[in-house]
Length: 388
Image 1 (cartoon, rainbow, N blue to C red):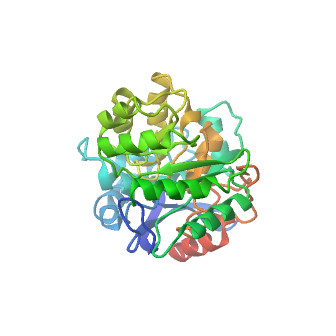
Image 2: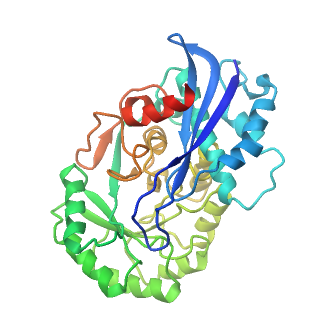
């Protein structure tokens, strides 16, 4: 049993949208295929992975460092102690060989993308959905296939007015979501409050709005928004300031009593731990958005979940960024609070397997081996083209 090849390519996911910090006109991601010599149904088992939107494809780092380390390793050194499957933790350790600690930026994205493909292959080799494999290995064996999802959108778009913003959000609600998210911070406070009011005007009982500043604000601006947003019953106020400005986040809690969310741009267990230690996050109401695809993968995410437990946090306070099926599987297998979803953006990489519908703000994951990419036809066409 061994990994015989790892293929990668850069895929465009460009769009004319923007948030408060960046536009997506040249956005890319990396797609990876891990080919094994294990045969199922007459075909080799292949694991797939890709990184989340907002961080560009990392093909060069993969080609120069991480893929060669895996392929040059003694195959037996990557197999679990039972000799029956690839060991993702051993593969991760091999990829991280000769890497100094700290400086987690793009390196964590490259490793996280390959790690996703490794876990997909491991679950397929065991002929299990990844969520069930995770429940068996790290939980109580009981996966919860019904997962909360919210619809992320509300980006700034050339010529987009409040009526179009309401139409967009209404389309998500009509598809079964009961929490929608919009961007703020890319306009004036007055303009953003008007935009928020317009969306709130279409929400019915049981429907909520979250807002996301994408780290744009300094402390004074973050506080000004906090005071203005306090009049609303928002689902959360997300990433007000720079993700590494823990003092800003800690100070902001004094001005905003309602739930806040952050963490999508923290890419290691150590950075996540600093947020918990120094960021003033409140385990009874706030949300953590660490994204395994950007933060060294599931191997590191398991370390982060262990750290959270040690600090009195429940995994149910984690709702990852990214809108991909990997985090859905983790949510179902390890008891996270849900997952982000992009109903219309960043396709074909966002969304759910074909036939999966949002009902009451939740989806039920199908029983597909691995992460379940093969159940989404447009995505699997991209993946199988890379593997063929």
